[in-house]
Length: 72
Image (cartoon, rainbow, N blue to C red):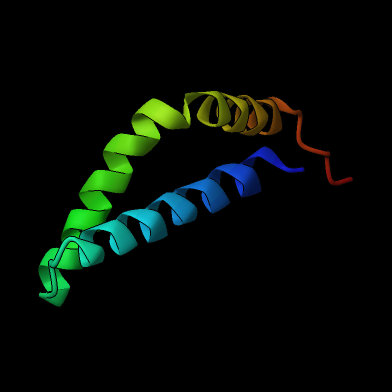
């Protein structure tokens, strides 16, 4: 599967999990709930998704380093 899709889906999944956990702990204010979920999922992705982030970065770097086709 494409590394960018895997990383993006993993980030979204972490956000949804963090949102659910924070909601279950009793946080009900929408702004605090969403903001807290962004923070928690961001820190979790730094720790848990390093392999996926490296694969995505390598894929994007390879894609950007490819020579562009010349228009004649």
